[in-house]
Image 1 (cartoon, rainbow, N blue to C red):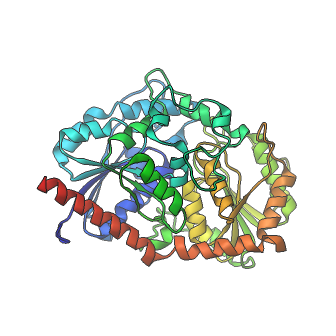
Image 2 (image 1 turned 180 degrees about the horizontal axis):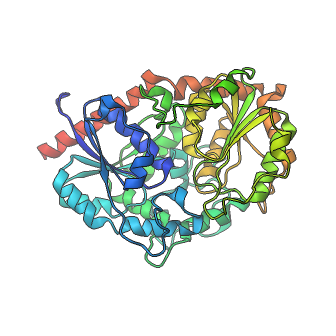
Length: 470
């Protein structure tokens, strides 16, 4: 297809910030090449996303999609960060009820493609009515999707895995050495997340399976330098093209907007710290730590004697006046660390030379951001795909996990301290630190990562040309 031809693409992410942000990053990459993007989400979510840079505003339309009333959802709950875990199925129900508005939008917009997320399994059927091609954009990595297996494991009740021993070892369809699997204590949360559906909901496995089955091809936030074997295997399992679009790291974007938070108070404190001495601590927007877990992490940080910045999210179910931190902790660590209960400029913190490590929940977005700046990771995975991400990173030798009890998943302050010291300062951890620094040349390289987006655009155009010829 002619390089001058510009595409119109609808982007429809799941309403979690770990999904909306990479969808927006991919949107900006495509908009820079002159393609027109219609980005769909709810009004409140669109307001909370990073601002579109003026240079791209003419190519990206933020389109409001209103959720229908749902008696099971609190007022203004429009993203997973607004809800406790047991309420998430109702947000999926609400998304399932926007079929009619989406139908009207596609009829009005007449896009060339709709790039959508894992949850909206009904999108391909609606898109087909208008001759719109569907792309499943996976914000999960290839190792996680490959672990889930062929479609029969997702859609066929009789062949679906149900026993713990099915998940605690690498599955039989992975033909190369792998350590990517769940541990016993992680399975209860994983299976609860997948099966905790209200009466009208479809499980996550079924949602992904239906979308993979019906989409034209799969785009994935990954690259061949990191997981070539898993990417090839994924294409073999699903018998359709799997296209890595690169890591979509903020450092490879020309615009790194601060989302209106221009008064960056942490910068001065970080400037005063020694190079690679600071630990950044954050567990994303969906992980709700218990008070006991917060205490063990807090005392572990204190015992490590390492300077730190901790972005501590208060779970939405807890009252504002409940003190989550150990008694006297903030006084004892004054000068050693900084604690934020709200928004932080994560990419600016990780980019700072004084930050050497990241204590993280192992969400894929946080891993991408950390390694794009060459920071070593200490991992405490909690839910969903996080345990599999952690195994992959440990397998690559670029992160370690905090030791945990295999039966109940508990961890101790001593285990936190030990992992922090190993990763940040001990001689034995130098190989890990060096490998993490090396990953910056992959995840954070603007030229090579840009080539993945270029290849993706070429594939979209070729697909359109073949479709018109047929």
